[in-house]
Image 1 (cartoon, rainbow, N blue to C red):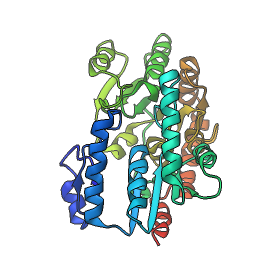
Image 2 (image 1 turned 90 degrees about the vertical axis):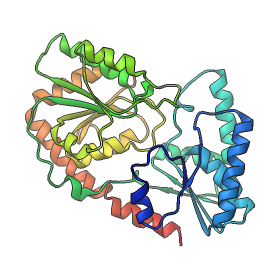
Image 3 (image 1 turned 30 degrees about the vertical axis):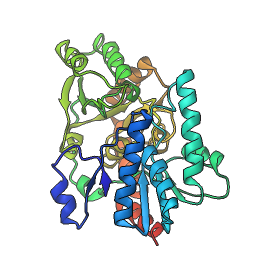
Image 4 (image 1 turned 60 degrees about the vertical axis):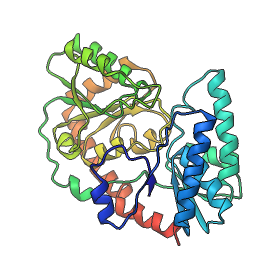
Length: 335
């Protein structure tokens, strides 16, 4: 496993499974060509030492770097997981357009004659525009979840609304806050929570000072990074993720569905493949705090529809998001 070690917490668990770890300081947002060449050389040294039969690259930079090196070293099987296009493809402006063209050209070179895993139809279409016939494209329903963990989830209805994600503006945190302000003018019986930590490497991150200000104003209760998400889902009635980030298939929406928590999210690629409007949640337009507020109140005030959605969530999770099925699909690609 070649990865950036951000915490020693999981190292012991990973090594217990006979996985050797090579630490790599790969900065996702770094565009300095000299430091990136040094990173590429370091990956080359690691890959040459490992001499893999199968190389599985995850996320845009590793896909580009790993594929180029894998081809150079004649690696037998190269699998590339493109789990969303990220913030670069969500932003406008001349610099982002230039960056998008550069990434597309690098992907064109790197993914040819490889197997590519995507998580939604939009990303499949994106990869197809780069390579129509020379690339095998596989759609998977995210990374799935361990459904056994959610068998015990049995919530009391207590008007608890949650947004859990990296603290990025593009995850729709600002729209969530504005929706709460609209609701608080009418209702005082609803509790709003925010969970997750700022991704300081991402230029779109929200400063902790701003989050604590929202908490001080009584808009939300900030939970920070939450390790035990199963317990938090157990206390959550409605999940809200008004994202306009270039998602693959958000893990938080999959977890919420497995836990029987109806979600309100944007009608965007990936999100609208986890949440089916009026079945297991509500789809709203991007940047629509009024619509978010309206749907939060609708789910809270319509208990029968809400209970139907809870049941639909669990049924859908069994059909689509069992991680054992997704792991088996992935291992088959290694053959």
